[in-house]
Amino acid sequence: MGLEDKFEMYIRDLFKRIKNKDVHAHIKLEIYDHLHTLKEEAMSTGLSEEEAIEQALARMGDAGVLGKQLNKTHKAPMDMKTLLSVLTASLFGLLIMYYLQFHSAFTELQEMKVFNKSLVFYLLGVVLMLSLFMFDYRRLLKYSKHLYAATILILLLTVLIGVRVDDVPFLDVGFASINFTEITPFLLVIAISGIFHSWDWHDKQKSWFGVALMLIPIFILSTTGAFAATTISIIVSVAIMHTSRSSLKQTITFAVAASIWPIWNLLALSQRYSMVSPYTDHKIGEAYFIGSTLQVTPSFISEVHTDLILAYIIYSFGWLSAIMALALVIFFICRIFITAKNVNHPYGKLLITGLAAVFTAQFILSLLTNLGLSPLTGVSVPFMSYGGSHLLLEMISAGLILSVYRRRKTKETVSLTHGPQST
Image 1 (spheres, rainbow, N blue to C red):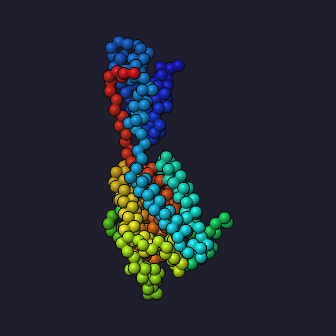
Image 2 (image 1 turned 45 degrees about the vertical axis):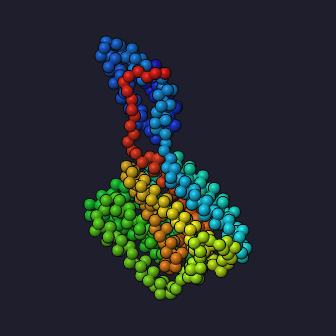
Image 3 (image 1 turned 120 degrees about the vertical axis):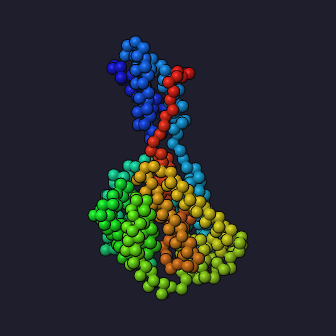
């Protein structure tokens, strides 16, 4: 066995005790540097190389003891505040589905078991969220261009061969019909965050090319009539451009160019719009501060479990419950922005900023729709509205946020002393 192999064996034994693999590479460099420093100090006193190596290892101390200490110091941090806000909001949404299924004639008329299906989606979503916490989000970076191309292709297929259900384009994939317009903003965040994490906006040619890359999916989305998804995608693109250090002129130019067609269509839609539903027009005005109508029968509203879930909460459970539900979502969004400020990795910062933009835009649009102030439909309340695809997407996004938080510090420090360790 070579003399240097003893150092390698020591480090391998050390890593058996350090569960957070994200810090292994940095710790290895630190330990190697420290061992060589100790070896050189020993050799300067006249010891042979072999004797110096043995003394260096002895001064480092037992690998098991040091490994346990470093494992404690470098445990993978879980953002408990974000996790608890997601779980609490999800439980709140599940409670609403329970009342809709068992205390309302709505599901009987619609033949829907919203609670049973939601429970399955929530449980699967939690598993995905916790799995992604363990996943290193940086592995997605190399697939950014592929994901962008796939998103464009899927959108084109949705436009060309998609089937419209309630004026919403769905793509039939054989085993299910999927609303990809709802998924697009989340896919765009992952794709363009990787593409633009090191983009040179000062290069005139690249800046125009970057604007074009962002405009393409938004233009395709706008042709589907999915105005909510289009609006969210525009907001996401503006947030990522700003965070990737584009100039104010470039950002404003893009925002104006991307918004012309959607705003024109939205104005046309508003001419035909009075209220999304009579539920938001009359029933909210009848709501109490504390709900007293849990036996409500909202059978005349097809979207009460999806788009208008907040309006249902206000009328059936009262304004206090609605304020609590809103506070949970707002707290979650605030936590994302706080995390974004503390992320050092450029890709991680763009990724989490984009997800924060998605949740913020989605929340504001859903609030306006539920209060009867917006004609946009197809906007769910995060973690609360019924639906499989959007719940899983939101849980996956929360998992990515937890993954970024776990690795928000690109530089780790290992505190070691030259003195002997007690065993």
